[in-house]
Amino acid sequence: MSLSLADILAARRAIDGIAARTPLVPSPFLSRLAGLDFLLKLETTQPVGAFKLRGAVNAVSALAADVAGVTCCSTGNHGRGVAYAARARKLRSVICMSSLVPQAKVDGIKALGADVRIVGRSQDDALPESRRLARDEGLAEISPFDDPYVVAGQGTIGLELLEDRPDLAAILVPLSGGGLAAGIALAAKAIKPSIKVIGITMDRGAAMFESVRAGKPVEVDEVASLADSLGGGIGLDNRLSFQMCRDLLDDYVLVTEEEIYAAMQTLYFEDRMVAEGASVVGIAALKAGKLPSFSGPVATIVTGRNVDMATFTDIITGRDVKLGDSFVKGRAYGA
Ligand SMILES: *Cc1c(COP(=O)(O)O)cnc(C)c1O
Image (cartoon, rainbow, N blue to C red; front, side):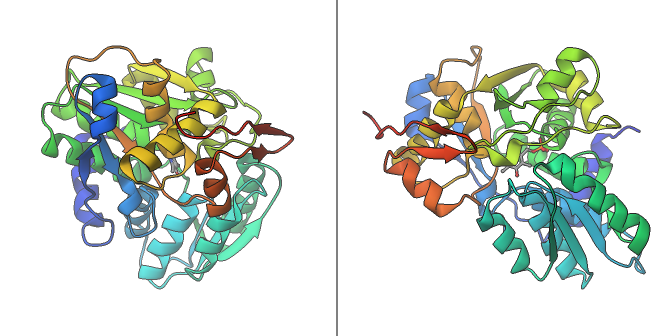
């Protein structure tokens, strides 16, 4: 299976009018810190609060008219995108998630009229249920990252980035199953081969990073993280996003929970923005001095805003946050 720029251009036409063309805005604070233009691509402004709408709408638009409905497993945002896209086509949707998914995300999906199934302790536990629904009830299963229509849909972000700023030197992409990074890298490098695309993820349970290092898809333990949207494996039977990330990404950076916590505060206090942990890993990497040096402007994708507001309030007020069996130690911003 392989994708080309033409697939991403087709995705752009398919999602037009349903998914938004999002703003790219400079962060004055982060630009000063980086010593170059540091830009934020605000996928938080999508109708479902996350970029996943792009891939979901593209995948649902490709289904036959007589399909019985759709199903997927999800860490939350993909399910919300699929539920939204299905509702727009008056299709039934069944979203399978684990108990690690924050309640705010579950509630957002239910509000779109989807059936929700909570199965197991990780996204990998929820996957067999969506496979079963596909088999037994004839629903079309849409992978959150390993589907050509999903990757092409996420890739439309790459087109928009280079239209707005042809001078970009690098793109920092939050990385989990790799659909987002694969799509953006394919689009951006087709238009501008010299651009660097860097995958950024948390340092525990980083499935794509571990897999690329091992040279093949490997399993990791999914652990609770402030970047809950970055959890889950890439699938041992991965057929698309692994190869694309391996071949197209220039570098990987891992950030700690403490660095994610501090970056959520930074984005809130300096840029007045609410975003989930997965969205700020690029900012976390910059603040932690973990990025290579760049020859020109850099953009990061602020991928979603569907954060649990009680947790978010704890973070901006500097309180401890409980994560599974451990916790992230609280620290007031600037202290
Ligand atoms: C899904 C998701 C990601 C990662 O996307 P992948 O395609 O799985 O790599 C990043 N941020 C948010 C908010 C997400 O929902």
